[in-house]
Image (cartoon, rainbow, N blue to C red; front, side):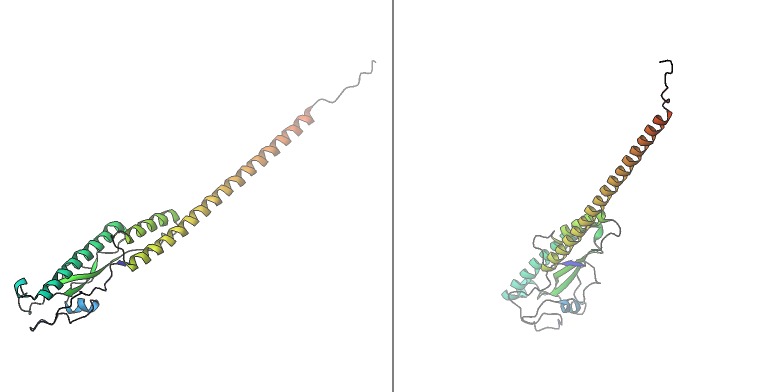
Length: 221
């Protein structure tokens, strides 16, 4: 299962397409989705590396060549990049050994030619531990903590946390049922021991009665 930041990010001030051969420039109002990763030729999946700009593109424009609107978009993208990376880092740190890999990011090319992460996800193993409800309970608690680790958990994060809470509740119920069964077994064993002890006492008393001397009659009276 994936715990992730929201991938639906669109700069408030979409920048116009630049009149150059940069095919990865975003269209006005375009939503940041998986296509952004394809257009930016991102690094391999589950890689935290930022994809480099295409080698055939012209040099990245400096801040002086960007319009005020474009500079505003760059600032938003930079802030989003920091937020997303911190978000996924929090997931990864809290998940520990239950993380199935490093974070994977979705990118958007800014008007400055830089690819910024606008969404991300971390895979996490959410399966119960077979035959071990105590280990499952501890795992579920870790998963829930990992899902809610970021400052602003996404809807997907909260869904994973809810699933982890249900897994924890099920494991807790199994632990309680096993404890009750063990107590019942102990009580049954004690009752059996008491019954055997009582039977032994009864047999011992019967043997003693059988060994008592028979009463004698005094015929001299």
